[in-house]
Image (cartoon, rainbow, N blue to C red):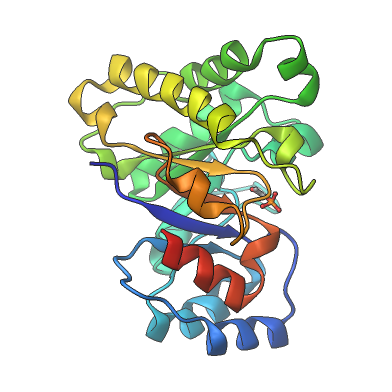
Length: 246
Ligand code: PEP
């Protein structure tokens, strides 16, 4: 069975005071190392320190495809491991659209993360125009095939996939549970083709305006194994509610 996860993507949000308030108030039931937060990289250490007693695991929103050296502004996978990091988001739609990240670049980052022992949360998703042109599955499966090119896995825990329709991110518009499940089911088939039995157990998260009021219906779908959440992960009460649903 795939493990369920709830992952908060804090993007470029949260002051130090807000972070302290968050970790003071977050309440997690039945924590199985499956509640994760990706803060701004600058806040990684503070979050890791405050998250310790709560059991929340901390990662980053991005990672470099390079080993080390003259790469100004990049985040080294080795350094994140040294700091006790667990995971990194890769290929978030904001990285793809605002910073021009290509599938090939994303594929190199996935390879680097796995090589170093970090869990990549590989994000894929179609734009509204692509959905309206009936290209959702070809776009999403194409992003996955390219992002996972030549990536081999020892077990299902080494990779997480997040399906995030671009039109649902930060817009308040959520994919219906049926729309999300249709894509997740197609992703599951592809993962089984690529990874056999292991592919059956890789966790598939849904992202796009997930909140406490819609999370249960989404998680009730066969192939939805948790959420990647932006806005609703910023407040301890909402994140706690999302984790309980998980
Ligand atoms: C995200 O940033 O990955 C996301 C899904 O954001 P939101 O939950 O705010 O739509």
